[in-house]
Image (tube, rainbow, N blue to C red; front, side, top):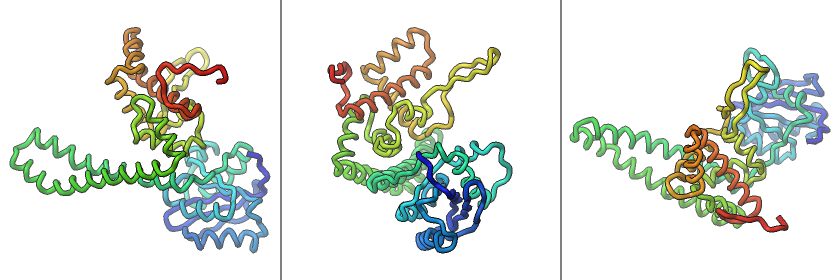
Length: 338
């Protein structure tokens, strides 16, 4: 982004309050606190000019990913037409060298210094459409409900196998209604999510294109749609593979340290897990991925290495279908114009 900012404002977010630090260039001007409410944040943006002569257009606001606690701040700053950098906490911390200690005011100051130090490389935050945010919230709720259901049902099944039937029947009696309610809630939630994306022509088209790829189901397609922000934030399959923790990275130093390329543990684990399920599912039917797995296995390749390659192949095909606006075809041949 082209940087024309004069002021860098770092904001550390907690549940009830926000700590902020304002730098002019690399010189600290002000540090303070405010409540994590729309009214308090709006008053702060207005006081910037009234008290310090700072115009919103001359500022860059920086904050870390903190889940729902940052929603009010993002909403108020976006309403004020502020330039916002919404960055991962690990990225900020690693960019500033060896750091010691941690307090909210110190973190706010570090965020502001990160903005100044990386001012020529910052990527500004753009709000997602309301429909994407709604589906993300419902998808998160679905994940929690699935977790609760599994925490009840899995131990119950194991208890049935290794204990007496009388005690098992007693346990089942006491959690039967809870499990039935959770299953009903999940069915209703899936129906609501499906109705939402089907009501939007653009989302419906992208979901259907993604689900045309072998082994890609509605849950995986939905997560790809949410994580990429409708393919606006991430439109490169290789970047998405890196985001998911599927892309291997070399490990080498000089001539003495040479190890095999490995995938990073820093990827999105939920997305990686879904892609793994898709890759394993693709081996159960006669698809091109199964042919690939059998061929590479015969060559002596390690099983997980082949599975990871299949994950990447699935990503490539999903992004190709979205890019070309076409359904998946196993033997697709591009036209001359392409």
